[in-house]
Image 1: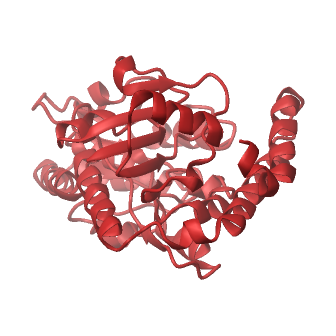
Image 2: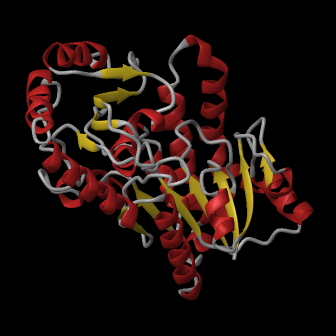
Length: 349
């Protein structure tokens, strides 16, 4: 199967391992220029068509994979193959919702946001597809678990101002190694990994830490946590968000029961590796692409291009409205102009 991969290069290697021919278009450099086009500016329909023609690449399916930043590829709504969208940061990017009209299937990372993608009663399906680990990075090499509790991540993120105070309070109650940078070497030596969310989402760290063989201590949250994991069996009992004393109490309690703690870590690892890996998501996406092709997709999207382009125009307007800081003024104007012109400009792209 020929897979056109847009925005994020995350799936290049795993699709290739599954026997697919892959062409990646996006802002991230790839080590193999034969299978990728590194975009340094926004790509529209005319450029997208020219790239596919010049490469002799006829996609059987396209995957738009959220890369946690602004879109760099537009015009994919006119592709004559199924287009699948995979969100990651849907909880903080409302423009994903109007943009999803250009997908024939949208896979939503956070369970409680699926209904937002369903509100327009479009013929395409919106489905929950949780995040995942990457087994090429996230694994358990059997090292000594000499770190009782760890946290690896940005210590002072602008969007989570209470993180560092929370971690410092936790450290006052229980042992904690807190670092920035590469997480896997730390998680692979940790008995417990402490996780904190930005907005109650099920984030990558939840799956990465479990795959590395640590018991995960995360916030009590929605978005399907209780559907994926069982507290006391595959994760530690979650703590109330922001309650460092409660989180530390859970950690201290389970550290006194090393065998029970090890069983939780093993069950969490087995659960994640069985169903929530990059490879598992890639296989599911390929199955969905085949199903859509057999169902004659795209049909509705091509027959309603004016409505689809209006959705993309709305997405551009959402993005422009968010870019209020002075350093983003030029980018804001770009998306503002796209929002105004997109419904009528398809033939000129």
